[in-house]
Image (tube, rainbow, N blue to C red; front, side):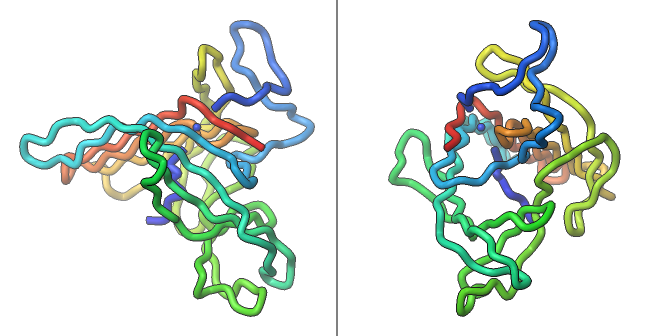
Length: 210
């Protein structure tokens, strides 16, 4: 399954705020990206996972996601900025994993790879995420179907407005939930597969945006 897992992260200046008891919301006149891409952006995540094996214990770790600018290219004859996504061990930053290249085009974020880039043009890419959400309901991102609801996320003692995306699956034993804070990025991810007894939960605890 295509996952920008990001698997997603936080310490940004808030550009708009509501009452003390209300979630901090973005400026409705200027929609903010659900996953802003820029060189050096970082989202720090707490990760709890259990693969479901016999006598398996929960494993807790920390990592961060970051983008590095790769350069400009063209997609469908339009210029786009390419970024490479990395997963980095937050404790030992020498441990990292490179995850393809990403770019924004129209209303979506796409992924591609080196072999699909030739002579300054992207020949193949996959739609993996939506840049903005305006209302609750059912949406499609490529072949995946999601139910979208308004929610909130508490970060560093502050409550932020967030969109929750719950993947609609034919498998009742499979659960995939993500939360995104507009203008900040991924805040939460929960994946459970009851067939294997596996659980993966990621929670944003800090972020850096440039």
